[in-house]
Image 1: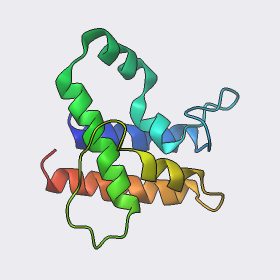
Image 2: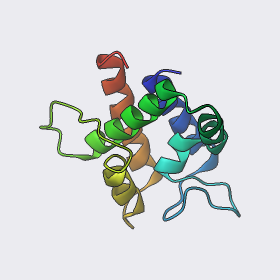
Image 3: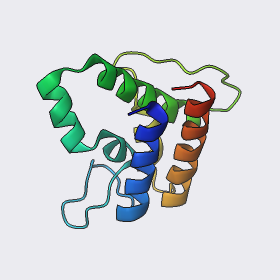
Amino acid sequence: MTVAERLQHGRDRLLAHGLTKHCLIDPETGALCALGAVLDISWVRRWEETQDATSARTLRRALALLDWAVAPHDAKTVTVGTFDSVGNEIVTFNNRPETTLNDVLDVFDAAISKAKEQDW
């Protein structure tokens, strides 16, 4: 799965299940946060079993693109760091009280567009 496909899959899951804050998935409603939408727990379990480096790189790039998309758009490059350094911006953005599902979907749209531009 490409980075753009992983992000599109996450966006589709958000659209289908709704947005939650402060947790990956709401156990009562099935709503997801932005990070939870990208992680897809079944995919994470498969990665833990196989330790597939390509899948790990795809996830790191997807998280880096989401972080880039919530940053001021004068940033021209996407920085892909370690798992400890990616995903922080999107989590903070997602959990703001004023952030709506449409806001998060807009971030996904920007990240998907950038992923395609980068051929990821």
